[in-house]
Length: 461
Ligand code: ADP
Ligand code: MG
Image (tube, rainbow, N blue to C red; front, side, top):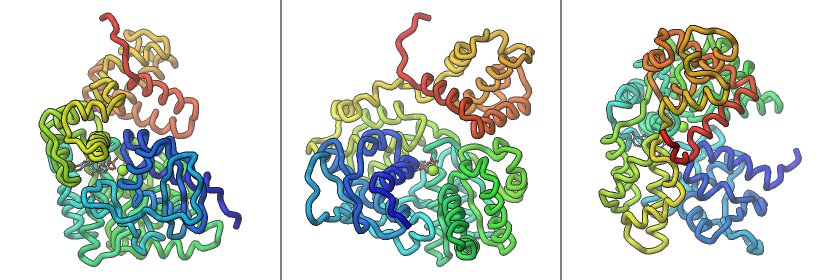
């Protein structure tokens, strides 16, 4: 087998890290890094500044190492250095298990399970999950399946927008079950896919089956990535049936409800109906506040009220982004040796605060952006007209109202010409499916979303 280049390995690692860390953290610390070398499992990564190297070293080396270990299939370490530094003769691992208070810190040594799945993050426990109206059903279900795996709700299906705590709950269930001696496997559906493909290529399908079908609790994250991959779904389906038949617990997380999965997943969907689906909504202000206070305690920083307010208001759309912002403020305070106050928070967050304070675009903004893009009149979109262009604009508007403004289907129906809830759901699901198989639609949706989130010039009303 030929060796992948350091660059390839690092790019693969960045791809995974992007799914695991907050958007601001990724953009601030990881995006502009590059691989220098990768020898004997020792990765050297160049960063744009010393500040970034130190930050990554302190806060992210464990996560990066766990990720590299996964990708390289061998224990790996990482060292960060400023770009342009000559590679030292003996790369030294900086993967010291960092001080308490490291939010992104996974076990420095990914346990032996690393070949089996991602290591469970010990910080993501059910006890460190803040419960509010937005997530109480999901939380209660998570507690129930950890107490009575295989018996309470099987499968448990958790869904909700990005950064709202699905992965945290999966790990929480895993940690609780593991502490009771059960064997747990946490994987993303991408890893399942990779494993499956590798097992076919290397003719190790038996090992593959054993790995996935021998666990007490299978936690599979981001199952939306199974969409469009029929043979992988087939394999997932068998795994699922096997586990379910022997009363093993299955917990799945997805960024959308099952009804938005495509028809090819009908079989999977009907299986999901055996269990319980629980959604996680955007948390309300008090819950965000409670989460932020808990995260601040976890990393051992004192955050004054005005800074807490700033963070809960400006990063209301994703707990992950809010936490990323807190980490960034804490890192600045730490590295500059000053206490956290509003001025420091502003300078630490810089351009992130220049983003529009509203985390979710308004329904009106979505409608007018979509109408502008497809050059159709809003009146046509909310009318009964069904010609192609208008229908597409309407469906895309429905999709974005749901995905970006997180509006309930009923309210969307009311907004787009008093349409019934099932037809709204259908339109939303249709666009969701089509974007998977139609790259140009996908690109269109991305660019629409980007323009919705782009900082806006004040426009005369
Ligand atoms: P998702 O998988 O839904 O995209 P994550 O589970 O990765 O989101 O959550 C992102 C971050 O937000 C994690 O650090 C997680 O601990 C935190 N988080 C989200 N919701 C909560 C909550 N209710 N209580 C505590 N932390 C939370
Ligand atoms: Mg997740």
